[in-house]
Amino acid sequence: MSEGQAGAEAIARAFVDARHSGGVLADYPGGKLPASLDEAYRIQERAIGLHGGRVAGWKVGRIADPLVSTYGANRLTGPIFDNGIVYASEGDVPEMPVFGDGFAAAEAEYLLQLGDLPASFERAWTNGAVAAHVDRVCIGIEVASSPFPGINEHGPAVTVSDFGNNNGLVVGTELGDGQGFLDLPVALTIDGIQAGTGTAADMLDGPFGAVRFLFELARDRGLPLAAGQWISTGAVTGVHPVRPGAVVEAHFGDDMTVRCAIGVSRQD
Image (cartoon, rainbow, N blue to C red; front, side, top):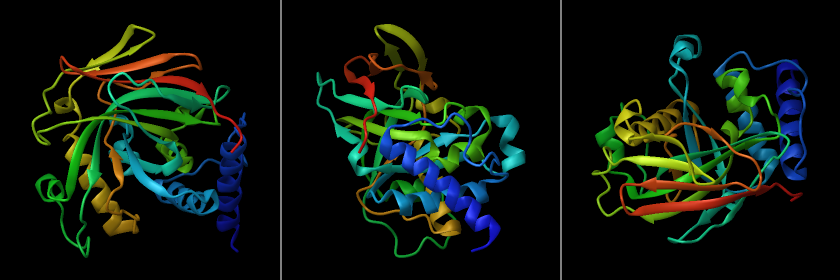
């Protein structure tokens, strides 16, 4: 094993052990931060293998405009494991765990579920082309959390290295018209106080652009996309810090809401 591989293994193992134990990492494991997205995805790939859970989806996050030229991408991704996905009917308030001494946030998101996938990803992809492979569009909440409190302070490569900072997903109401939601007003509240508003039309090239990004990663990196996986397509109203005990509500339009309560991660 090369020095680089050994370093990636150690970082991946430290994050996975902390996630399984519900612990905290006061400092980045090993002290040496990944310098590129390629290095970070290699850590993530190893961590997925060590984690042992089934990947049931992918979160997609935005890379800040000033960092796009440095990292060569405007989005990033990380796995969503099946034991972190909760299906919530209107009125349900499931408890979603976070690392209480780490980083924790909630995000209102559109969730797209993949249907049948192409036999090969080896082609140029457009938003319209990937839309043909999406079966469902639902409202939802992504719970972002990491045992490393500084995960979002050191750039997108660090975020990628710990599963893209994902720790769960609440799947809410399905939208009847999978393409007609881009201008729907979205608001997120925490304990009844509005934390942010927005629309999907304001998000780069929208939720289907997030799916296109993943299809391109499947082509270029072999990202293991599969039918039935959920794609959490990006924070519509922003990334909003939360603490255990908070109640989060994401409102889509005038009559659709998905909720969750924030709990504390426990040992697996």
